[in-house]
Image (cartoon, rainbow, N blue to C red; front, top):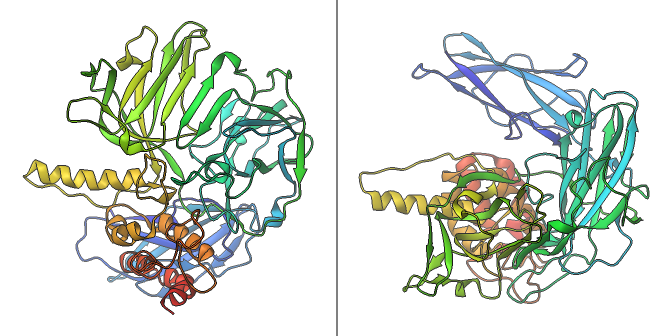
Length: 547
């Protein structure tokens, strides 16, 4: 039986679109050979069932990126649509319903202010923010629109919201900042509720590059949000409170250290202690480049358990997960109060079979955890990420590591679109290496390396790899977002920086081959995806570089 698969702006049932005229696409799948579309009709309606657009029957074989041409879409609203197509024999096929939801659609949709802790923010610190409130009725619909200067986790009544990691992502923060939209209806209830967030440095304030620059975009962590429920509209304001989280440090290069003995596990719930919490300071929203989420954020993907635990010739205890990956090691352990776990990460062993980290340069890439000691504890070091296959157990309680540890791959959530297999296992392994190279280096931006004190978006690397990347995985949204950052960071004279987002500055720009990414990457995306809007949007940037 033939079936239609629908997408809005290249996503299935997206939430939080800022486009005033989103584009619709569909694919007809079935067993019939040679079946083709000759006409289509799109119908869309609002949440009340009112028709907002009926295209009528249009004689066309086009099924890609058909722009919405109906009544003006309203912010924070849900719409439903479906398509009917006719084949070469005049047979009609009607799709199931699909939906999309608009976001704030303008920076003025954030009615509140930026908030940040009133106290000093030490380097590599993590901060917690929360607001308690009361609901008289259980909401039928509730949405959160949030972003940060830093990277954040959002919680409602003690529950982590969403599956996205490292939000709001890495953009050219001086000109562009994404916000995310979440459905928080299921987390709320009648009575007292609590919305909370944790904010870490991430790319915004943390050290970047082998020259270890800090505070490239700003020197304070900030959080911004709007929470719209039936009968209640909350914003970030002075009613929030703040406290420093029990991290000794948290960053991408050196890893993180968390002390569970200092942690209140109910800090993000209504029953959390009020001890130690302070006030926040506010700042008006003056930025103009706040946009809805443009790509699909990184998410937790494949999980690996240890394939072996062994002792090296130097006498060090090492765990092998059997796959070089980018992500982190999750810990699940029962230990005594004050017991601590510490491990270092490495990609390879040296020729003698010893743990090797010289290629990490100054990046310490450690995870340190002090156990709370009250039953089973689970810790996910998700304010950092590591490139590794092996970990060295620098400190570990009396427990079986193979039962306590698992490695989780984390990368931008792109659909796999190609495969390759031969009768030669070495060739197959080469292909798997290429795929894992893409997974490891496609975390928010296309990097050259995901493990050492660098992890930057080198233009030359993605110029060479972009066609392959778009073939192996659906990289359209990922690379389109990155190209917008390239345009934003391009110099007035058309020179393109060596890395995007540009954190090197100075004269690190306008190199032949590297800067050619401004022209070659959009062209490769057009060749693979057939979307002329990519060329239209990037044309001023392309032209400026060529000239």
